[in-house]
Every structure is written in C-alpha cells, then in structure tokens.
Length: 113
Length: 115
Image: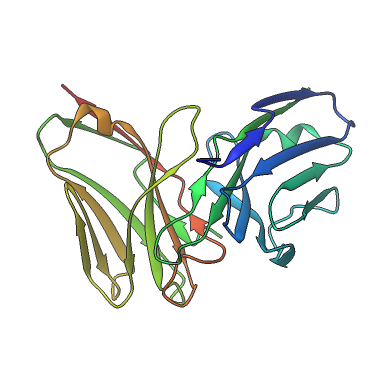
C-alpha cells in the first residue's frame, strides 16, 4: 500500500485480556519499528525489526509484551494480561531509505478499562 | 532519564512570523537528528533532519540548526502558516549518521499559528 497501515484504529479492552495490534508496513521497507505514546508523553521506543529478526527489543516494558514479524512484512504486537497503564497510542513505522525518517502509521489507540 | 528534551510544551506565533522550536540532548553519542510533525489522530510525519557533521540544513520554509558543543538544536519555520499548527517532536539516534535504528524522542511542542 501507499502508507503504513495499522489495525484496529481503536481498541477498548478489559483489564486482564490479551490484545493483538497489527502493522502493515510500506511494501519493500525492511525496517519496522513499534513505539507508543502515553498521555502527555513523548514517543517511547518498543522494538525494532530488520527483516524478520528483532535486533533491538530493549524498549518492551515487560514480558507481557511481545512482537513478531513474518515474511519481512506484517508485524503484530501482542500484549498479554493488559493493565490500565498499557493504555496508549501504539505507533508502527517503517523505513527503507537511510537518509530519511521513518513513515509512521496512524496508530492504534488502546484503552484498558 | 530524558535524553532528548523539549522544554517548551507550547508555542504561539502570528502568521507570517518566525517560529523557533528548541530541543536539547544529553547523549553525546547521538549523531543524527530529526524533526517530526504530528496532527491529531495521525501518525508523526518526517519534516527535516540533520547529521552531526553539519550545523545547518534547510528545506524550503524549514531550517534546522545544530550546535553540538551546546547539545542543542532548533527548528526555524519562516514564514509560519496556520497549517503549521501541530505538535513538533525532536528525535535523535546514534545510527552512524543515518536514520536507521531506535530514535529517542522529546516530549513534543504544540505550535499554534494564529491567522
């Protein structure tokens, strides 16, 4: 597609449930990133994929968070046993050209009630 | 530990005047800096970048200045337009002079340009 696509755009879930967030990067982009933005905060790095491997997953806040990427394309971010502090906008970005910044998707707004 | 700081949460300017957004960083390993613009309900969009080997990069109405000794960069928008009203994020990485890899973002500055 023309841009980075994320689904769902909004997700409300009950505390303790698992959620999956999906990212479709721009075709041909080998690098894929997940960030999140909590209320009033800047963007916080979560994980970086190069192809299907994740050379940097240092930003995942706890072992409840995991992510995978298959076929060098689609990525899913899974949050198990969601907590209220997980409420945030989760942003995915992809990159191909080293001289330009990433292209971000519009994000998934996750609300844990 | 906030390695990239945007100390002004908001900035208000008149249309046609200059907007100056500031950003400070603490990590001397950062060698590539970027500015992103974000409208509500949209993802951030890349605006302009600068490598640490330069002190200025210009693209149309947007200029980024880098002062490595002060660990400070700024984004100048001249002339400012109402459509520039958005949240502006400063970001940095140590990607060997490229944008690859993890970016560390500031908290953002809300720019409002009044007609």
